[in-house]
Length: 346
View 1 (cartoon, rainbow, N blue to C red):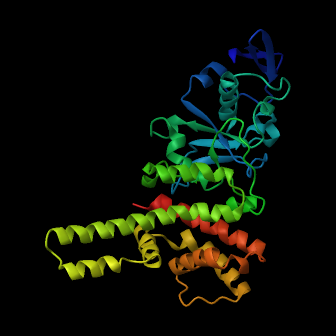
View 2 (cartoon, rainbow, N blue to C red):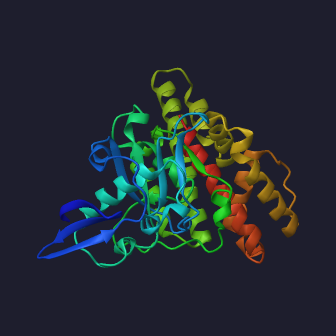
View 3 (cartoon, one colour):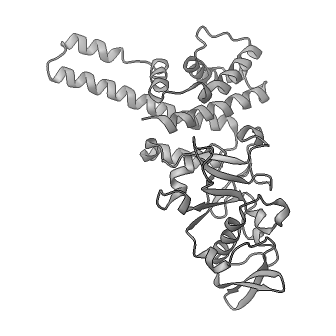
């Protein structure tokens, strides 16, 4: 929008704008505790996100650096509908973030679709993320640095005119507890994000709301790591052979017995140094599902249960689909393990 102006007359606050030849304004009902000109001169980064699951007014969270519980907030994330609200539904101490977001988002709008309710100019699944750059000391483009953490709560990059729908089998409390008020974020993009295939899958996932499809798409990350590991092993044997460090027969023997998927998944878990909290809920979910279908694996280590569930999904899905709730929970927790592998893979 052009010529966006802050207006405060007789205790009524609004933002006026010019949309082509038309002038208009939106009331702003939240309190403003500081001089507006000082606020907008601050160092804030405002971004839009998509989250079709955490899009109710109770889903507002402060952002804090992971493993720094007592550190100051570095930002907030909340549904865009909260910009229409009043002080009663706003967390204490976040007023600055909201007024800055309202002002910047209004300036960015190309056209006004609804002249009465500001948030209706956006899709209902849109969230707002505001960073206080002064609290971070990590430079700009903070969203790209912490998007992996936010994806763990079903946030994704904003796409205009998106049609992302909630995953009906997944409960919002699976992503974050009702009592939670903050989200811990790591301000470091995982090294695997530099792989185009991994980045593409992460961007596809928000559009996938069928849980069976979600399983097979997320498992492509593991397939990629398995293929890469196998290639590295083969390349190592070729180098040994070329340098005369291994006899020809031994070379063919080694290549013929390159590690299988299950063994490589065990290596992946070890490389990532996955901790108990990274997979304990998955282990509980898959064990409960195994009991229902009468399946008792010989090996119940986390990595073995990870691979055996893959085998069941691939070869015995017919035995699982009748237990829809338990299957949904297992796939959800499986996805979370994959997200931890992406985060921690060196």
